[in-house]
Length: 182
Image 1 (cartoon, helix red, strand yellow):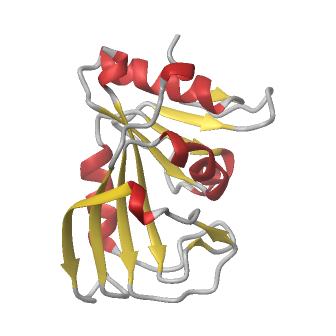
Image 2: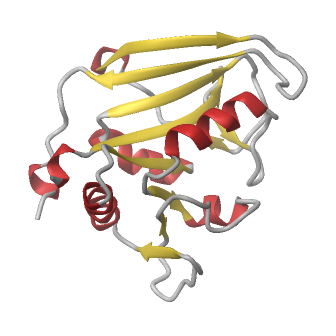
């Protein structure tokens, strides 16, 4: 059932909230990229146009790709295109329910995270031990609204520019999806 599908955000952010710089990730974290692939595989993913255009391979394989843009004529081969976040979220939740999946993911960027955060049930948050320069930021989290369920720390190694911690956060009180269900 669509109502049982969690809306999850997955993001890596620097200690200063930076998530991107000039359309690129401001670090190289092979371990986090492997986590991203493993956790999102088979699930629908929602992203903004800039995130879509920054992907090295489009669409991301093994996932229903949903692209948000204000341009109704935008063509994203291999992806669904929406100009309304609620419609995109409902489509992602319906696809997940149809496929027997329990999560639909928001993968960026800044504007899409801002739209999704008030509706999110879960966040997979990679805190990167870095203060990079950047032009895209993750919205401020109201920590009292979230409970950390898991946290795993990784040291900087070959392929991982910085130490980082992957945290799984659950919303303390479920967001109201009443206005989003149809």
